[in-house]
Amino acid sequence: MEYVYAALLLHRLGKEVSEDNVKKVVEATGVKSDDTRIKALVTALGEVNIDEALKTAVAAQVAAPAAAPAAGEAAKAPAKEEKKEEEAKAQEEALSGLSSLFG
View 1: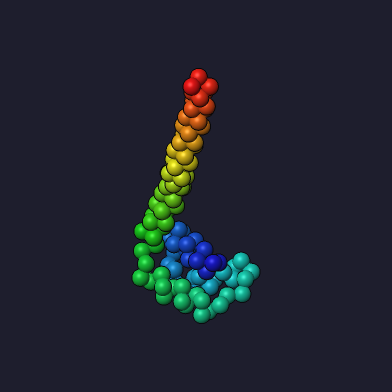
View 2 (view 1 turned 90 degrees about the vertical axis):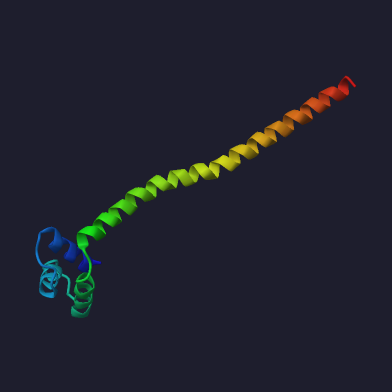
């Protein structure tokens, strides 16, 4: 994950996301870098528009919490309907009990 953070930092600062630059950033934090991971990351990011990927990720993150309450509301709706049905049954039973008294 630290390699991705290094690449994001370089991108944010307008620097080239290259193997050397990512390695320098990672090693500046005191972590020993892995050249294989760095090479794989830089190669993978070579075909990615980082700005678009960030916009998509932010949009998905904003949409997810908005969708969660809607899902919760949908789950509550059947429970409310069941409760209303139970109340209606209880009221009918109570009324039938009263009518038997006056039979």
